[in-house]
Image (tube, rainbow over all chains, first blue to last red):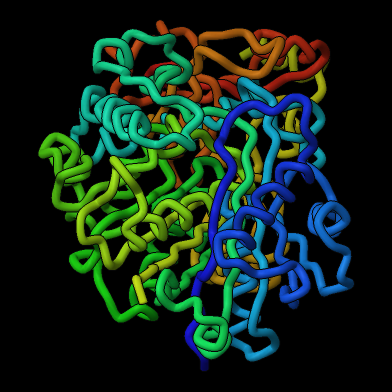
Length: 379
Length: 147
């Protein structure tokens, strides 16, 4: 099977675009990715579109940039939506069906709390009656389970937010670029204990896109110099675990996807130079250090304390600013994370560049659950 | 107990898995897999753990358990009364249930992992603005006092 290369990738600056439509944002990101590698829309053989809020987003994106009649697949997979669209494109090239495909992730988000649609046949809305299922509540519980097992502290969770907001001050495409000292993080409004408002990701609008090519086509097009090889791709759904029918388990699914991606890539966590992981809430980042094998189980708290995951540390995590500060437009996040790692592997990340980065990992997890992990390498 | 019997006579179950026994007592219904012993809330035909079909037996879940995990919710959907404790409770004899923990201050200093709790049934309107006419399960602190 052919190697698959990312030859063009970009994202729009995450923010609020009340005057623009979902597909206008998607189209802008798609054109940025095409321009990043100098490819015309007519060279694209298939489109994989990731978006949760609307339908037929891929086709409507092409209506704005070139209705070439190519196959379009629309993907939705919660917060793993963008990464799933990317992976579908990767699979199609691996399968030998196409040599050049476009993957786009996009979302427009209402500010504030995500209110879940009612599903199933329960007589009453369950929120507030049968506990809580808000995203902050889910990820606060996940954090408190870590407290129960390992004694992780509120300060350690809050430090994640301090670090990622600091990183975002070097990222012009981040929604926010503001320092948030520890006292400010701890002192902001409590949303669900122990996550304060500054420990929750920002609901923003955004789009990101990638052009993938087979190795052969990338060489024919002279696009190898800035190409990124997809060394491993893992996707998992939630395997049964003891309590996950009433308490979301983001650990089992993350470990499964990471294991698949590491095995395919033939590398381990010790080989990575940077990681973009799913810090939808500050509590989650600590758990994912362990889920991705960046440290031993129970060592996530000490790892943030050590500074190893900050820019300049042993294994910088979320140097983009992460979902906490860069923002989290659900369908776009998976491809935006791949953009961030690719930009470092290309040596083009400016002030936040991780020096000498050659291998990086991206991780997103959507509740329900879906986890996608990609291992990327400079060609 | 008499107060609860009066409630179950007057109110409808707030969830699909809340049942009233012939004596008028409320309980939560689960299913247990004959193959792997996994316990689920409510009815299902096949086992999500081992995939076995047709071996799911209906079971009455215990009203006694221990607090496995929780969060205190300060911001929720529009119209939901906050703050409240969203609790995950491991029940004696199997099964894990989510519910609001009542009759205790929503303060992390008051809550301990593993503390004993009991399931109680109260009018849903104590927690939900749409709960009038329904009865729901809740938890309160305390060890088993009777069977």
